[in-house]
Image (cartoon, rainbow, N blue to C red; front, side):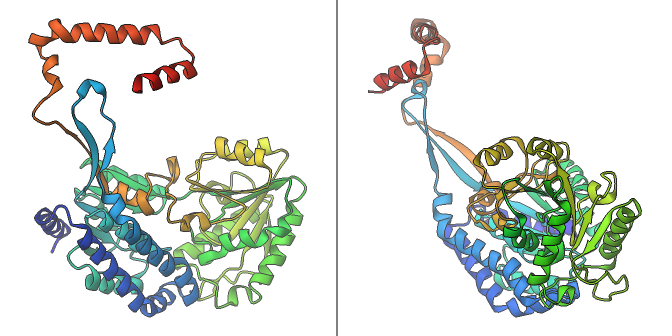
Length: 486
């Protein structure tokens, strides 16, 4: 069947049951959890096949475990999320009641990237099903082995709620043009622009989870020696192919070389065998492998110093493995500074003052994550207030994404909208406002035949009171309102 036909059938299925009950949604989530646990070994093997080298422990830690946590978190809180929320009613409209109820949007589209193909398929799927929607997932053409396992998993767990789509870029383009009730895309900023443009033809609302150059700022009060492991973990997880991976490191001027030496020493302790370690993940494919090597060659030709934390890169490595590469003195107009790196390469740049460091970050597109290493409370506050980023992590990297009760999403070029936890439920729901009256409605006094006799006089008094008290200090007005309430 064509994508349009499959979409139409899913829309028809949704209209047959437009508001799944709490028990239905929980049953679907539990089925997903059961199949994920049952098929995890197949997913580990598939991930190793698609990447060339990826350990089962890394796939379990970075993809399967967060997916399980997401399901469990939603199961515990879904009843509260679905409960209508009471809202205030102005005295002008008494007697009445207000509430907001969260209605499923309908059919949701999810476009999954290749770097975390399990978690970035199941995470949005859990949120969409929790909100009561039907789902179409477009999986990445770069992960065919994982796709086959995911397709079996989803068809076994939620055959009536989700439909898996595969295909190349042309299928993805057609997919993004379908009239979804919401579309979530995870991927590059460049492709995100095309997805948003296609969705606009149907006025489809979009959540874009993009990326960008997420900076790490080392404050002048800290020694890198105490925190190098946290930076290396964030940079090297999944071979650096993470949308929130540290993209560059800012250190006080004069400490660049020493910072590189400490990072290299800590890397060699964390990965004694370097890229030959079974815990190291390969670059996903030849195209990405060539892109990373060309970026380093360009920087080196422009005068940059490349420090390999392991053996020199072997361009013909069939498993496309690259130790962490530290880059000093790379010109700011080279590719490493202009594009998201998305690999195990870390430029280091010196700043003369924290003000200059903040301005350096502000002058660039807003990133998906910002990492600050400092115990200086004043610097922490300045960075939180002055730097725009999708998320902030202080004295660590990456782990803020794993917090179930924090929203995840970008800002500006790094994306729009957010999900995870309750925010995911809200993203895939329509917050419907409901105003309810009984047999009597005070609104009759607004009708023309009553307005001159009563309502205008009441409004004259009301506006007069507001004008008379407009210049009172806030604490005086608050005291007056409290007395009025009593």
